Image (cartoon, rainbow, N blue to C red):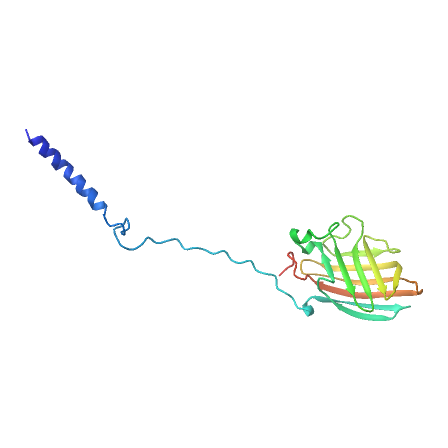
Length: 205
């Protein structure tokens, strides 16, 4: 009557041996049965954000103006952030410090002549594209100002023609005339500007 018990032991023996072959009592071994650690996936570090190239003053453009008539002056001033304030060149976080609608300012500020083209109260008067701005007695889609020392140019007529305007630069010509106040007399102001985007978030590389 011992035969069934012996048979049961023989049937269980192969299974127990097979299980022992797959396992090990050495905790340092990997499931493959070797002593080499499992390979880890390589860590990929994110690429650092690239900074905008810092342009030299000579690379930021110039504004050249000439006054004739009651005032005779010539000057050339450099580009840079003091010369251009353009909302279209800025990212959202840079625009938060600006007030008003989208537009731009061109400032040619020297010791002899101070000239500015700035937004007016007209909505969408200064789009992000070339445009000729015409002024009649100082009124137009933008505002324009010119100073010569303590005198200002009043009742300004003429044009500021923005011939190029993109993410790289803004360029154009000036052809204006008006009355010098308080000194009196007429002054004609002509010139040109080509000002490079000075490192704002929206500037072209």
